[in-house]
Image (cartoon, helix red, strand yellow):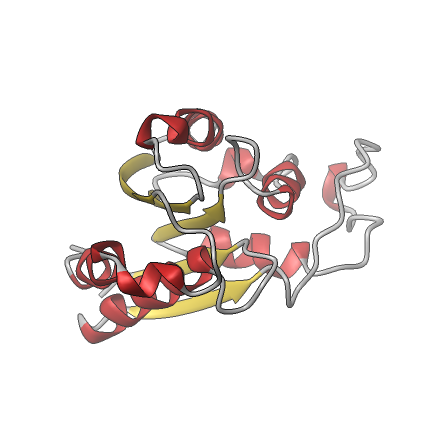
Length: 178
């Protein structure tokens, strides 16, 4: 059994990337894994100030959801990062969280990462910028590996992903976690 953390960075509950996160989590639960789903919209994360007040074991000066989420990342075996694609990269909410790991990323080690992405554009090659940014983060997490990703192009209206094969695929990916 794995400890799976699914982070949805969709600004709207029930948005397309949020729905993929829910389906992945459902599949992982059905496979017997312990799953935590965090919606960044419900636990806002402010941008990093780069002040390094958090160095030396001091708490971050920002009083928001980031410390609890980062702690969950440290405890997880599998981390799923879900994001809508905005201007061919990840959401600002997810980027803010990644930046807030600055003092602990050397301890985010030996994790398995999955990425779930949705975008209105129908050209799948447009996921490249988002993938590059997510891979850049994982590359900084020693011993961590990308296990895969699911990109759902051509979904714009809220909930549209339900009517695509990607919705079922997200469940299957979660269920197949080993």
